[in-house]
Length: 185
Picture 1 (cartoon, rainbow, N blue to C red):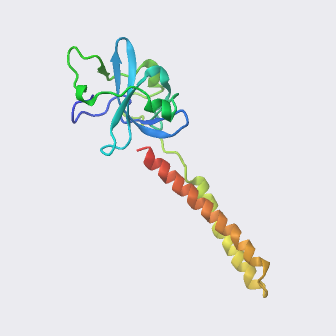
Picture 2 (picture 1 turned 120 degrees about the vertical axis):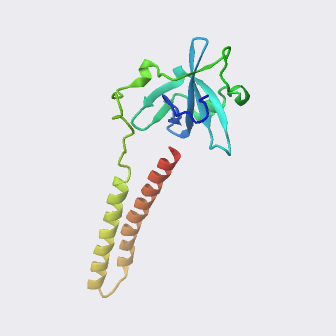
Picture 3 (picture 1 turned 90 degrees about the vertical axis):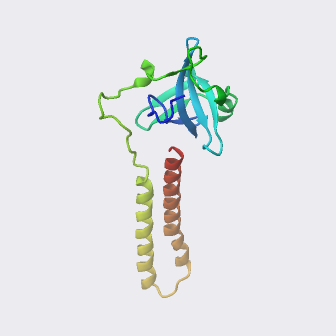
């Protein structure tokens, strides 16, 4: 594992996603042993749960440097059945079975620009939420204008469900966007 206080290199700290797109942990390090490349995936939320599973590099579907994510071809249940990395044997010595790799394989490098110009890309995930929220506010204002012109309010109350539904869907989309953002950290 990386020495204490050492900066992350390669894919370390990238979010790990299953084949279903669920964020399940983060990359702890990239390991090499017996001509095999392995990805050490830290599952759970340390310090509450700290379990490191080892996944063969062939099970990596994609490395997305824009979103700092590694997508696996494994499902959640397959990942939980992967071999566990023994935390007591995490110190690298001359005769270690596995060694930390600091350079990425060629297929994982992607189109990273040289120097300090590449980095994560923000994605607009709140656009639909903002649009629906504004539409809900305008629908409510239209409803208010309509009921001020009508003397007998009967079926007009049912139309109030439209702006309420729009604002509720907007709130759910905003919550989902922030929840996914927090999960990926």
